[in-house]
Structure formats: C-alpha cells, structure tokens
Image 1 (cartoon, rainbow, N blue to C red):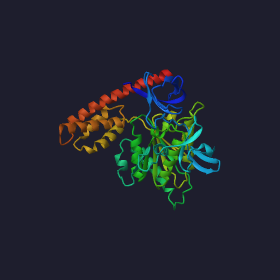
Image 2: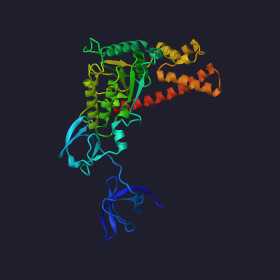
Image 3: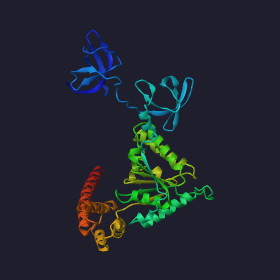
Image 4: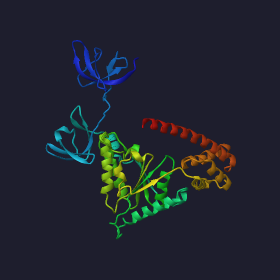
Length: 412
C-alpha cells in the first residue's frame, strides 16, 4: 500500500489518453495516469503517492491549505462598492468580488481567484484574537489586591521605588477629578539588559505596588504572518487596558514587535511598528495605560519608541554586584527560614556574574532535593546540591553566550 503524501488539483483531463495535468501545493505540475479513477474533472482534487506512481480519489472536502496574505474586515457595502478595513486602513473593493458578503465578517484575498473569501469560524477566531473563551496572545493579571509589591524585590529597591512613584503619579493624572489631567505625565518605560536580570520581575512588582492590572504581552506571540492581524490585536490590547482605571501593559521581548525599521524592512514590520506608535500616541490622556517594554537587545528597537512621550524612562539592568546579590538571595530564601545568614552571605560571594534568575535556580533545585529526600525542612546539604546544579547551568549558559558574542564579533 503506497504512502499518499499530498493532494493535487486537476487542471485538465485528456480523456483519450486517460491522463490529467495535476497541480501540487508548491506550484509544480505533472501529467499522471488517472485511468483507474472515475469522474475526474478539472478543479477536483486527487491524492498522489510519494513516488508519483499511484493516484486515487481524494475524500470529500479535500483541498490545498489556505495561505492568505491579506486579511480584512468588511465594514460597509452599498451596491457594487464595498469598504474593507485592512490593518487600520480602509480600502474600496468591488462587492461582486466578495464571496457571501456580510458586514463585520473577516475575509481573505485569494490572489489566484482574485476574490475575497470568507474565513472559517476557526480562522476568524485566530485573526481576531477574541474568540469568546480561548486564550488571547496576552495574559491579564489583576494585581490590585496582591499586596506584596516591593517586598518581593531584591537588589534594585531604589529603582523600583522610583518607578512605582512615577507610575502612581501617572495614574493620578488620569483620575476623573484630577486638575492635572492635561499635564505631561510619563507614559512609559523601557527595561533593557541581559536575560534573567529581573526585568519581568520588576514590572510585576510595580503593578502590585501600584495596585494595577498587568497585561503581559510576549512579542513573538503577538506577531502574526497575516496582514492586518497583528495591528488588530494591538488595538484590542490597548482597548482592554483603557477599560480599567489602572493598567500596565508589559511587552516582553519588545524588539520582536517594535523592531528597527529600515529601507530593507519587510512590510509587516513597518505596519506593526506604525500601528503601535499610533496607538500609544492616540490614547486619551485620561485612559492611557502605562506601557513598559523589556528587551535584551535595545539596539534592535526602533528609535521612534525612545523619544519623549513614549518610553520616557529608560532603565538599564546589569548583572548584580555582591551587595545586590546578598539582597536578592535574602528575598529568594524567605520561604526557607532555616537557612542562616552565613549561608546567604557565602552564596552572594561565590556567585559573581550570576543573574537574579540563576540565583533563583539555586532555591528551585534545593527545594527539589528536599522533596526527594522527604526532609521536613531545607538543610545545608540541600542548598549545596542546589548551588552545584545551578552552577553547572550557569557555566553552560555562559559558554553559549561567549560563543554567540564571538560569532557576532566576527560578523562585524
């Protein structure tokens, strides 16, 4: 029994020679024997074996995977003319070229058919980012009652207090009865520095300290291959944030969504950056959310985001020094009261060059050792085993990072 690996569309049939020209999903064509098939007509689909030696009838509903490049929403239709919104811009279209036109529905333009085709329910859910129950490409945490705030921060309390003050002042200018509502207030901050240095942790602590709703966005998850999809989700994201009096939007890996534009940039980069800039600037001062971006590669962020009025407050994150490491491990070890100050001081001393995330791995591995040994509390042996495991991970990461830096130096 042959392995049937792909569908093919019948382009034409030669009844005399009992052959047919078939088109494959990659655009290639071939003339194959279809004498054993019934009712093979142009436009139908067949299934072809890996060696092209066998052709059989395809199941009902078979077809090529749909790979759309342009997606829009039908906004208005009047006679032969229609208006379709694509990535925030409205374009005119011939209503006769729209299959099953319904205002409000999503459509994709098929270049081969030169028609706007309606998206399926599943495709529409993916494009809209709002499917009435499935997970959106961002996470919403209501931290207004969390309460831990800066108590969960170690190593950078000073900058945390300063940022919390700025965010709180920004929220106050947006109160309905504020006389300072029209005053210029800081509207955003950008955190930059090596991975694992606490950027995400600080954003969460600030949201807790200021009693804000935190909306966390992963840059890579937000970016879509479909035209207009990323821009639509950006608008939905800010609309959600504006519905709450105190909201912080946190963009993780911001360089993927706010990439530097150039003459060689892909069109989708220019569209998504333009949409994000316009959305950040266009929000009313009373409802504008506070925006925090985090990136490991500040040089890859478009400079337009760094001008005053957008990310007004840049914050650099560096690897902690000995004093900061002592504060960090003290906060991280609060769940283990049996760990002595001498042990914490020793860890802070022997972990030069470690990030807060790597320091946290010590306690994760130590707790795992405690569970494996079924011990009632964390012992010094557990801590030492946790340190040894984390040190191995630190060495591996540092080796990979050094190799990456060397490759980048060679390129430049």
